[in-house]
Length: 112
Image (cartoon, rainbow, N blue to C red; front, side, top):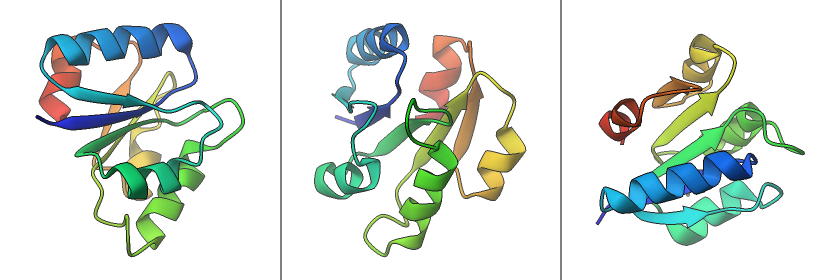
């Protein structure tokens, strides 16, 4: 079973993503908006991290930079999501994929 970690601060989006992913057979781990994403990534070892660019008190791009600079998490698969079209910037920082909100469920599943 593919394990997906969600780092998203919009509770409605979290509920929708969690329901969708579980219905499609994914194991889902949801982080609180203020959790240390890098530490959780190292501890939980998900197959993919779905990371919002704009978390309430954290910057997703800075988190991605930290993930990529650590020997323990540098190879983690990270898909960034945002309501702003920041695809190029996310890819430049090392994201494996990007989804612009709102996105279709099929587009998400294809990236996972």
